[in-house]
Every structure is written in structure tokens, then in C-alpha cells.
Image 1 (tube, rainbow, N blue to C red):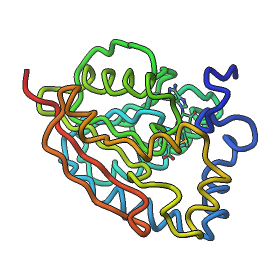
Image 2 (cartoon, helix red, strand yellow):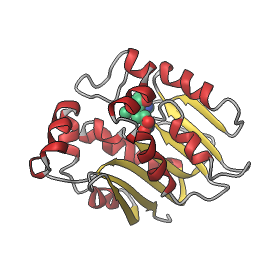
Image 3 (cartoon, protein in one colour):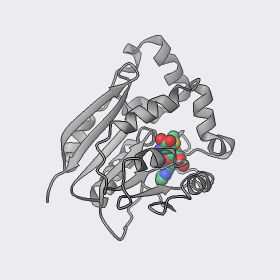
Image 4 (cartoon, rainbow, N blue to C red):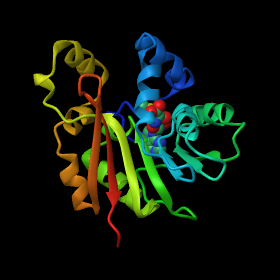
Length: 218
Ligand SMILES: C[S@@+](CC[C@H](N)C(=O)[O-])C[C@H]1O[C@@H](n2cnc3c(N)ncnc32)[C@H](O)[C@@H]1O
């Protein structure tokens, strides 16, 4: 797969994509599984919500969100990696209300309906600022009036002020876009793009944030 952002680490390829869930589980000594259940459990999902999952990965998050949906709710993953899409389809094959399509989230796109929620998990930090602005616009356009943009990602912090046990792996693993991302005021930026009503839940020593914001009624 061609990489549009060679300095980014979110365009996951090869063995890392093929074994993505297992690698996360092993690297976190099983802790990721517990964390992601807890974080997704905190999202205020209604039984009939329609949810777009930007950069949906293997479908692990879609399955967790689906636990809160009745038969009427739906999830559509947007993903560019065929290796991820194959895993997503396999994992979610029992559920007719969960689907995935090969669709970039960093360029404009049209879908045939508007959604109640756009969820984005550990994708956003890995893009240049100009691309992040495009993603915000794409989320805005894909949402119904009053729909919610839900972002699970790093919190805002000054990297050099974080404790060494976080700072060292963060600096080794993450890309330069992530270092810029954590220092921006995202509530202010989202509000410039028509979002309001912010709610946040913090995890893992406040280094991870589930940020929910609402599309203003036009
Ligand atoms: C770090 S993974 C996170 C996957 C998933 N959201 C999760 O939390 O497990 C980043 C994902 O974003 C996808 N991705 C990267 N760039 C993308 C783009 N421009 N459009 C759509 N998906 C993208 C990658 O293929 C990968 O599956």
C-alpha cells in the first residue's frame, strides 16, 4: 500500500496490520483489552445509533460499540488497509448491521446518509495539522445536526512534563505529528469548525482522552 504520510505511524502495513490486535495485547501485557472495553463503555451510545468509525482497524472497536446497539443501530467502518478490512469483515461477519468500506477519511467523501456519531480511535494524532482539519470537516459533513464526534486518542500535554515511564515509550513509538497534536487546544479548534458542548473522560494517568463534542444545529 502506498503511504500518503511517510512520517506517520497510523498507515499500518504488513505484519503490523495483520497481527494488529495481538501486537497491542502483547505490548500492553493484556492491559489494552481492559482499557479499550472501559473507554468504549464510556461512550453514550443509544440503541438505534448509526455510527461511522473513521480508520476502523480490525473491527475490535466496532464489536464493542455494537454491544450497546439493538438490531436497529448500525456501524460503518471507513478504512484504507485491505489487511485491516479483511480482519474487520471476519470479526463482524455475524452482524448484518456492521459493515466496512475502503474509504479515505482525509479527503472529501460523500455517503448516502448522515450519521448520529463519528468515532475515531488512535488515528487522528497521526496526521499533519492541515489533514486533521480535513478530517474534522469530513466528520462534520457526515454527521446529522446535533450528531456527536467522539475521539479516543492522546490527551493534551507537554511531552517533556510527562513522567518518564510515559514519555520514553511515547517518544520512541510515536511520530512527529503526535508530538504536535498533544500540544494543541483541540476544543478551541473543534469550536472553530462548528462543534460545541464538550465532554471528556481521561484514562491511563490522564494521558488518554475520550473527547465528545456535538455538531451545532445549522
Ligand atoms: C492505529 S490504527 C487504529 C485502528 C482502530 N481505530 C483502533 O483503535 O484499533 C490506525 C488505523 O487507521 C487506518 N488509516 C490510516 N490512514 C487512514 C486514512 N487516511 N483513511 C482511513 N483509514 C486510515 C489504518 O489503516 C489503521 O487501521
